[in-house]
Image 1: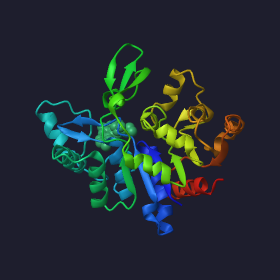
Image 2: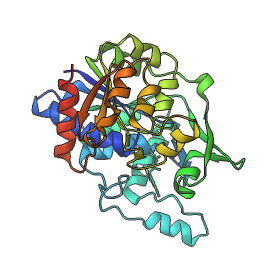
Image 3: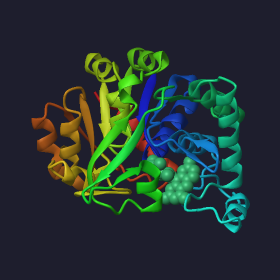
Image 4: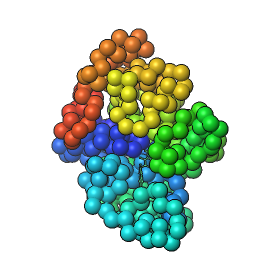
Amino acid sequence: VKVTALAGGVGGAKLAVGLQQLALSNSRADDLTIVVNTADDCIVYGVHVSPDVDIVTYWLAGLADRERGWGIRGDTFAMVEALGSLGSETWFGLGDRDFATCAYRTSRLAEGATLTSIADEIRRALGVPSRILPMSDDPVRSIVHTTDGRVLDFQEYFVKERHEPEVAHIELDGLDHAKATPGVLDAIHTAEIVVLCPSNPFVSIGPILALPGVRAALKQHPRVIAVTPIINGAALKGPADRMLAATGASVSASGVAELYSDFCTGFVIDTSDTSEKSAVIALGMQPIIADTVMRDDDIAVKLARTILDAP
Ligand code: FO1
């Protein structure tokens, strides 16, 4: 089955691992494409970091630090420590090998390469069989407006302030001039199934959906299945639950399902959250029940199989 998945960081990466293992077990590695959010990209320590693209790449390469979720297992932090001793701020923990990835990206961008071709070069160099597509080659940035009137870059909000501030709204800076790459739209059109990973609907999936043509392509697609990032009223990781509450939506799996109800045909809820089933049906989607907490790769593969087997 030709699959295209839309993903943000860690939750997206874990499901991508399950989908990739399934594709590999059928000797169809090139059937999987992951479209990844780039709205939390940033320039740190002089290099272009694409956190979600790098997280997905490292997980698919088997290199990820699975405890932290981001970065490379066993990486050292000598560069950041040295910068700290020079008086720099060091709240962003970019490992030394991770820095090399980002330095490579930065120098290739300066040579005129696109984010898409650079992501492809990096994933091939690290032995990733699946295609990894940044959502756009144009800069789009999530800017966080807090209820106390501050305006923060996404990583400043997420890492420096540990996503503690209350969010009033998210602005997608650059969206007016941004396009999804032709490869992204094509990957949606040609997939037999499109999967929305259990990533934050506002700052991970939201920026992908906001690009011109993406939502329309999904509306035309006969099989789009999303996996809930909310279980029993709470996000497994990150601020998705508080962001849902801030919009006045119900803080539940069906609250997320509602955001996708104009194009999703199926919605995966967790086995511990089956009371959400009727609300998903009422939204016109097929409810699918599965273990969505991907504590290991076997659970991720099982979840991937349940999604692909769903009607
Ligand atoms: N997340 C943190 O909470 N603290 C960090 O110091 C940190 C460093 C980091 C370095 C490279 C990278 O690719 C990701 C990194 N992340 C860090 C994760 C990242 O900021 C977020 O998980 C994503 O932006 C949200 O998807």
